[in-house]
Amino acid sequence: MAEKRITVENMEELKALFGELDKNMEVLERELNISVRTMDGGILLRGEELLVDLGEKSIDKLLEILHEEGRIDTRNVAIVADMVKEGHGDSIKKLLNDVVTVTARGKAVKPKTLGQKNYVDMIRKHDIVFGIGPAGTGKTYLAMAMAVSAFKNGEVERIILTRPAVEAGESLGFLPGDLQEKIDPYLRPLYDALFDILGFDAYDRLKERGLIEVAPLAYMRGRTLDNVYVILDEAQNTSNEQMKMFLTRLGYGSKAIITGDITQVDLPKGKKSGLLLARKILHKVEGIGFVDFTTKDVVRHPLVQKIINAYDRAENQREEKEHMGEEVKKEATNKADNKWNYA
Image (cartoon, rainbow, N blue to C red):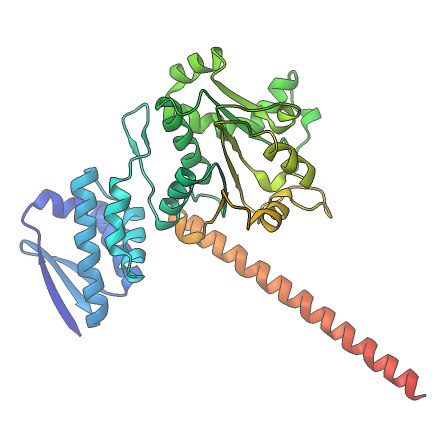
């Protein structure tokens, strides 16, 4: 059993590091399987020597975030501990310094994980980027932030946000209002992200001038999009024809970001997702980037990561059972055929 003492002279920093009811350090204890306690003027770590060393490195990085951001939370702790465990502790500073844009409330938008950092860098390098992964990984929000940044810097003249209006158990016909009012609920996540980044007033002004457009995917047909930053959200719900139509709208000076979660396809049974087919067809095309997020990139409530992992395990078990069932049927058929041939 190893021990290490870390001096933290500023008591306010020590309180912020531990968090309300010591919740931050509870996460660190759970992630690294060590004991973390306060002591006079600092912190006492106990556990296996290697894990205690990782704990010390994690606390150093958390203090860096605290000095940079002014606060830390349980999400920061989990991400830092995971990165330190995997030997990526030195990359945390790169995340802290990479400000994509600043929201209307003055909050800096930065990548929070290595997957998000890779995504942002890929967008900077390529004109077409696919961001594929589970919910809560920041695919759409970061794409939106990159679009706003490019617009503010004069790199593009307009921003277009679109998604397929595919029904997930509800029917458009039963929603009240005209066509636009029926479609708006499907586009609400895009509006929410825009309001957060730009503020409602700025968004409203830009929309009135036609500089920002939020529309269903069907409205893209027949258009050529020059000098535009266009984001296709929920792309797993496109058909192959829709995906091809969207990708061939891109004109000069434009960028396209396509985001989706292949585990949440709402297309009719038997209909193949245009996102899956696009990855298969385009993965070797130069100038097109693909980023696959994992549950480690989830930056929502910590339970979201656990929920996604639980569903993934259940899906894998279901597929294994189905595969075993097919094998049993195949073996039974072969035995019957052999018996018939012998007879």
